[in-house]
Length: 280
Image (cartoon, rainbow, N blue to C red; front, top):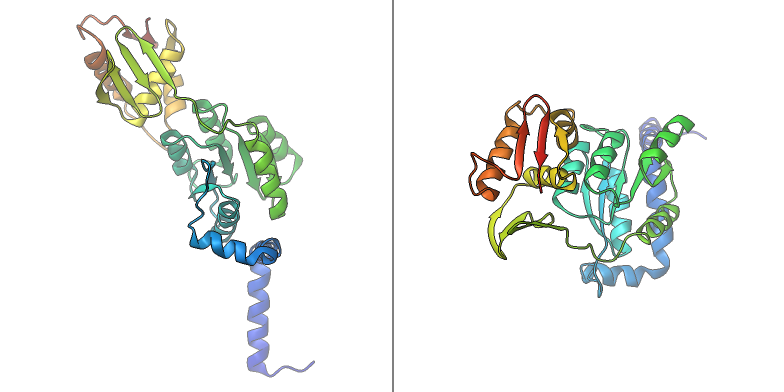
């Protein structure tokens, strides 16, 4: 067939665009196929702002390809989930430590921390939170490595209906509400979800996210020395460079809050050349 040069150029450009974004157009096609039969219902849900009568399950999505991230986020929201999206591995880890999510979906090849690195850090703080890898790495080596770290692994290109079903199956393992995570000792209680410290039932301090993470590590291993290297590995990503005094400063702050005499601590101890210990 003969094409005028101008139209031939447009046709070629259009074909190049489709070839370069095959995954996007495939997801778009699946989206319309899934939703065309209940278009009015979808429209009503948009108008209602996805309001649900019950508690919304919260999903963290980390994907650096914008068109895939937007398509997945939209479809999950249409299913009634509250989705927080990120395009960076480090940001995803920070989000997961600030807020309790029912499910985490990670690409593997993320800027910052990789999906594998992010999964390790997220699981350290929230071992019961299911993680699903959504990635173009479909070879057996990466699949096996991913399934050793996470709960499920779905290679790209993927079918949206399959993704939704996998999400629903993973969420069946998670209770509808997160239990309040509180540790009590002496006259104090630590709420690891709100970061609030109470003394004899009265709120006295709100800690930073990282201070609370450190407290959780130490209190979960009471009377055991936790090494400085282990703490650094668990609380800081490979791209961060905390100073040698950072953890010491946190311990000093804990003594000010919890110790009757910070110079003679009962609870929080520094073990020279080794690490730190919480005694209870």
